[in-house]
Image (cartoon, rainbow, N blue to C red; front, side):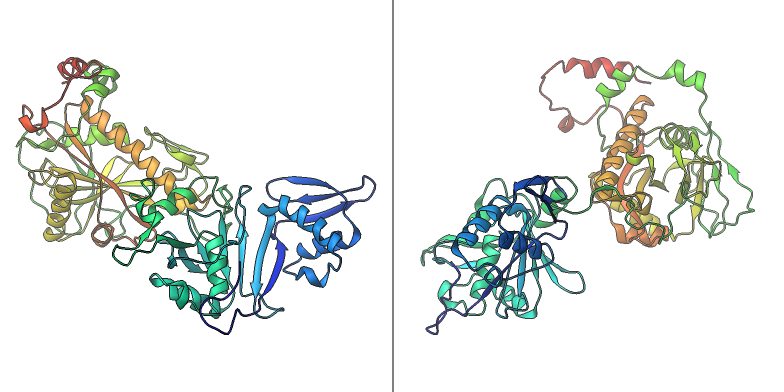
Length: 529
């Protein structure tokens, strides 16, 4: 049904147009009496149709056409309709008020896409789906929804005007003649929702607002989920190197902060500071802090079994007064994030080589960086640092005491701690290490890598007898400002706090109920340092 409901003048005449997706190629094979329809998903072999029908298909592969300009006979139209019905996932449906210029087009995105205009008139108010997202490519508006297997292209401003009217529910009687066919096409594409029923004494109900499968999804989260996986879109996906050689890529090892003098003599932290107080911040221009390295034989002798670390692993939100030592911080970072080797080139500034580190990384890109905000750590001055994983040292970042306080307070809130953490580790991502290579899934890979690094930090921290807790959120504006980053290029994607345990856990964290060998936890903790 495509007809007007908003006035007595009747519906405006529209001109339907038909075409194939841009990746479709029609190849007749006269010797076999067939025609091959090539597409990104498959090659469909059909019995060769009549010449007029074949010509219509050929023209459809070149752009939108009015079928009436090619097909004259009813039999030919039935033959073409039968073919197109079986190729719905390749057919683009357009229409316009001008026979020469489409107003909007509906493009199928997957092999399961099916487009059918509603047969019945609108009965209840309609609105734009809350999951529909609109953007421009510089020439047209694109409307997409994670719930739809189609993309809608709005070619002219008049179409966008019709969409604008759907900012709130519109009764069928209030829909204008110009907007009505646009809304019908949008509804068929899954971009417009119709109220379930209209009761003047009850709030208006839309199915997508009460569907238990949808109520907890936000439009952005659901769109990110569907576009970072396969099955519901037609975007380029995987290792496609979308930018080619047009843009620079970060080197395999991030250079140290430019504000730290290169010839400054490093300060070597000592592993045996125990509970000594942290030195005062020496101010701007301070030297990098070279961290102690653990010894292999000592680790083998002291480390509990992996099973003990896994079973005893638990995020802790309380920290004791005893300070971390430089040796403990150095051991944690060395065992989890150091560069073990450069792969492909010994040049740390190489943009094409990779590295080998203790935690797994999708694409082997190792785009993650660590920044340490130190509050209470023996032999490491209070302040903000970037961790150099190649040289195993902390590179100071000039910051005001207020900046340090702000970061630590944010870590306290994010981890729901009683006090500010002794050391806050902020995980950032240099996005182009992945996005230069991958299309569609690069950011989801970043988040998976954050999970892998957080788990590695947590298990090693547990094995060392430290108290650790991952952060669920972070402030990209604050960290960007303090760390001197452009958040669009590198920004916070995770965090981790670490310190010493205070002793027995508070009772409110001990209210646990035995299920599936819960006593393993007790045995595991007994095996820890």
